[in-house]
Length: 475
Image (cartoon, rainbow, N blue to C red; front, side, top):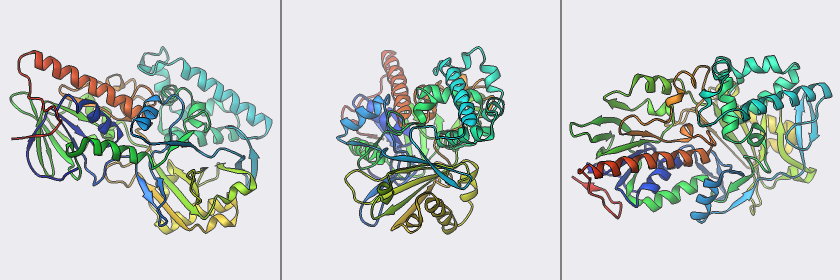
């Protein structure tokens, strides 16, 4: 990867070197000249490694893969990486009313009335989700009705007990990094359907949290960037995309400009709004991007000399309505001696703790760990957290949210190209929206759109010169 201020001419510019942008570039690079422009000083986007003092690394961004995410497993194999299962043995804990209760499985043991209430609500939600077509959720006969209300409104009507609502909300926070009042019911149903089911999204073994990648998921992006070589330019925030009189596009960034025929925008929706387009994007596209705020998440990891909780036959998994850490996992890497506890601050809690001092946030998180696993958890060897809402080129995680009215008020055209501008990223996926698998799927679609457009352009008698080695052509 190089840093340069030269003006270049390529056929395709990809904005963003996250997993979607890099995959799109990788799919096109053997046939067309490609340039990837990344604002950060690193590749990976919402995937990032942190390195502890002992040399061990941990994902502070997206990390999990699971059954049904076939593109991810193929990519992992192609790049020579390996996976291992997240630790899922022993008892889980429910922290409720100041007491810890052990349980196995996805749903904790609670009083029979609340348990039946939660089970019925989950079953009703799953039935509704299965009735959706994830490629076109707006076409459902009840789409207007479901998109007009929040998930919170639906929970109030379908969970009669407060405890059932609280536990359902924990699951929603874990999946969306948001409060039920922030998203439309239709979006919640679509999101679950796009990842098979809500149960799949919540489960570890057999679910979306089943496996992790040795070397971190950011390592996959680093490997793709190495394959692309000089095609990837970091520290080059794109500021403007202009259409020239000859129909080509001029992509201006802080270190120069690149002229091209097609652009793939592969950054989160809220970051796409930072780019000026000339001519302006259609009003519907701009309004849709404005209506897609990111979730709020702080990922917190504490490192210990060993995973001591396993000695007490605990899985490291906790659910707590009280929080502020409402969900935890044993994030220890297979083959390493250190024990890693990971917890999430999400939604309103993340917004609160994103505004306090790092020391205060650390104390609150470790207080929770100690409450769940004993005083030994209060004194880790090292601690790290990542507030994705404060990340300059992300401003939130895990993915964009769809408030009421978004899917039926413009979402029908979410994946549509705007002239020579195409869209990629997990928010533009049909399957596994919000996950790395969805990012890869969206990249495949965007790359296919670009390839078709360039083939048609070439057939029209005005082909651009193709650099078969994929290197940029300077002008």
